[in-house]
Amino acid sequence: MRALEVDAHTHTIASGHAYGTVSEMVKAAADRGIRLLGITEHTSGIPGTCADIYFSNMKVIPRQMFGIEVMFGAELNIVDYNGGVDLDAGYFKHLDIRIASMHTQCFAPGTREQNTAAVIGAIRNPGIDIIGHPIDGTYPLDYEPIVRAAAEHHVLLEVNNHALRSPSRINAFENACTMARLCKKYDIPLTCNSDAHFMTDVGNTSHIAGVFEETDFPEELILNLSMERFQGFLQWNREHKGR
Ligand SMILES: [Zn+2]
Ligand SMILES: [Zn+2]
Image (tube, rainbow, N blue to C red; front, side, top):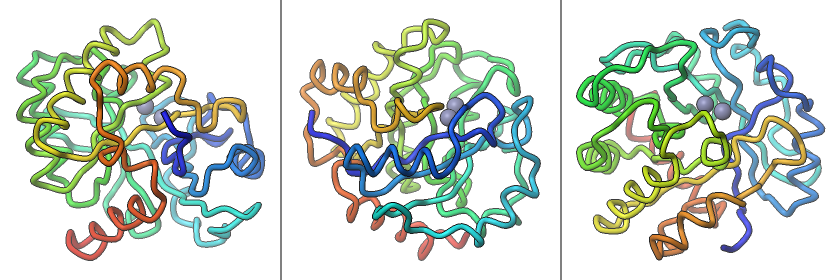
């Protein structure tokens, strides 16, 4: 697949289990030809990550560094079967991009129906832009209603390189292919991100590429291949969804 213009989901030392600084991550992205980098630290449910106050002062960081654009956001934890998240919506105005994900540290896997309801609840949250790695079979999901809800509420579903590579994530490749096939069927764009926790992983699509090959996924539905289209998607959310 073509190199990404956008890697929207990465972490720095602020997340507590990632090892690059903001400057190091942005420089690595610039060196790799990324035009827009998203830095999205974990919210408070993940042990060792930053406190909520971290997300309130992001205005002090420039959105252009090393010649590329940078977004500062968060990867929020889904914490209940209604799709509730662990960061107060009052912080959202400080965040350029908001990802909601299920992590075992914060959310016990339920039945397929419960997990699906949790994801759809997060999709309906007007502050959420992306559902992070909904491909980890630790949380079995029913993809048809999720893909339809994502389209209806203008939220992106993510094919996540880190999750595809991680042996602790169950059936991630098969689930990503199922999700991608449905997005292709309904002509719905996807996002794909490295979820890098270190500089060497920024922009890495080594495992994502296999999903798009397997499903013969159309390039025009991979939003990360165009910075302008990706920014347009987020801009639409800021203008139409009220947060
Ligand atoms: Zn995650
Ligand atoms: Zn992440």
